Structures are given as structure tokens and as C-alpha cells.
Length: 217
Ligand SMILES: C[S@@+](CC[C@H](N)C(=O)[O-])C[C@H]1O[C@@H](n2cnc3c(N)ncnc32)[C@H](O)[C@@H]1O
Image (cartoon, rainbow, N blue to C red):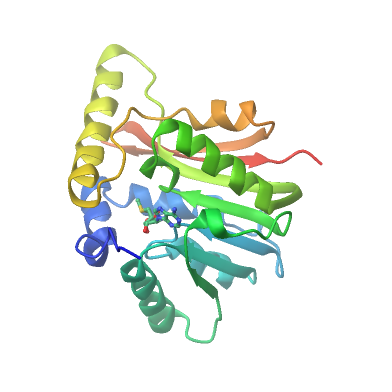
């Protein structure tokens, strides 16, 4: 299995902190609190990367499974777990998320900065698959770049900010090069109800959001 994150993976979280002044980190854990996560909940984190969100969920007592195609990213996640919470155990799967067939098994499915690696038709396919892994009334969390709205200057800033990031990842990891996706619209089109949105800013401009959606029963 080719590891597209072999080179950028080791410094991925460092770069995202540099790029966002920690807004990305805050965005990734925003919905993982005691209101949304109960001890024993089964949570799946798709494309986990370094996995601060998975660590937070495990610290809240959830039964966490993480999936990633990149061995480099999974190594960084194991290092984080080992250094910050060696007493916690997290199920780690090195595979393509599309090969996970545990349908209707999870109370929450988390996709932080994951869906943006795909072109739009594939992204919708992956999103549909993630929804199928949730139990009836499961929660789906998507943290990502915010859909550009506001006045023309705000929209220009958000687009330039996004295209800088997507260009770097297209160059280093061959991720898809595309516009910012409107995740709430996609989630609603696929039958989910939006429960909450939290926004995170850089230079006083909202650049990221975390969306909490619920699957209908
Ligand atoms: C942009 S990174 C985001 C990582 C992490 N979620 C975060 O917020 O920092 C995307 C991650 O998804 C993983 N990935 C890409 N395609 C995947 C697939 N089809 N199945 C599982 N993981 C995948 C990559 O290896 C990478 O770790």
C-alpha cells in the first residue's frame, strides 16, 4: 500500500498549527465533549492522522476505532497515544475506509479534514459510506475548511487560504485539487439533520468549522 503521507506525515500537525495558529486543532476536538460523547460510545475516526481527536474521545471513555491508509500517520498516532495516555487502548486499522464494512455499528463517526482529500463525486461516495457505518441516530462530525461566505474580501481571503493549502497537498500527496465543499448541504442532501456548527477563525475571519449532524432513526 503506497503511503502518500510518507514525507509530509511526520510534520503534518506541526504544519497545520503553523498554518492555522491552532484553529485546526481546536476545530478537530470541538464536538468531542461530555455532551456528545458518553463513556462506552463506539466512535470511528476516519483518516485519523496524528489523532488528537481520537485521543480526546478515548479520554472521554469512548470505545474508539481509528482508520488510516497511511502507516506514517498511524505511527504518529501511536506515538501520541503512548506519550499522552499509554493506559488507553484504541483499535487501529491500517486500511482504506471503503473496506470497513461494520455497517450500523458506531454511535459517532468523525471525519476531520478527511473528506477534502477526495474529488467531489468520490467525496459524496465516501460520505455516504461513513453514514452507513453509523447506527440509526448516530452522530456524524465533519471538521474542515469553512464554505466561503461573507463580503467579497472575506470570500476572497477564505478562497486564497484554501487554495494555498489544497495546492500544497496536491503537490505532496496528490490529493484532489478542488473548490471548498459545502459539507452541511451535502449532509442534508444525504438525509442528515444538522445539530450544531462551531466556527474557528484566523485573523478574525472564520476559516474552519466543525459540523455535528445526526442520522435519522
Ligand atoms: C488531510 S489528512 C487529515 C488527518 C486528520 N484527520 C487531521 O485532521 O489531522 C487526511 C488523512 O486521511 C488519510 N486517508 C486518505 N485517504 C484515505 C482512505 N481512503 N482511507 C483511509 N484513510 C485515508 C490520509 O492518510 C491522512 O492521514
